[in-house]
Length: 173
Image 1 (cartoon, rainbow, N blue to C red):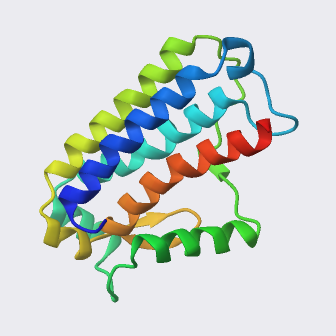
Image 2: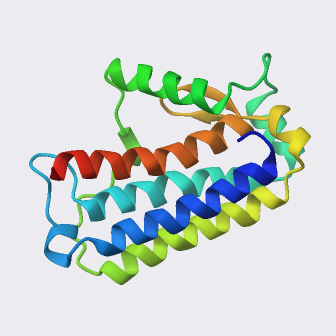
């Protein structure tokens, strides 16, 4: 996966798989913490919360993105390199920080999943506005990994969903 079209195709697949996974969890488990870890609902809320700023940045004119965050001084990492870099940051103690879900009690499954699906749709719509070549010419700040090219940020956003699904599966097992 490298091109914008491949990213969009993968995003569609990940979104379908994510919604199917989260939807299959019974309500009593969906809202219950897994030990000391977040509930599945909290994971979904965290994912939606982390997608929104990426979408917001991609909706801005590219010149503003460049003025606000500068231009990259290196090429984009591959998807696998980005995943390894992310795991390295987690191994160093990285956390969700301000992107953790709020502490408010949520019990509306439909609202949680709808907000997540809407965040994914809006991200997809924002990506379409970016030509493939621009994904490597602009960068965005990631709170854990520093500046990432837009392509890398999209790789992260995709992997991040898979990462949380795997975490929930592992913790429930």
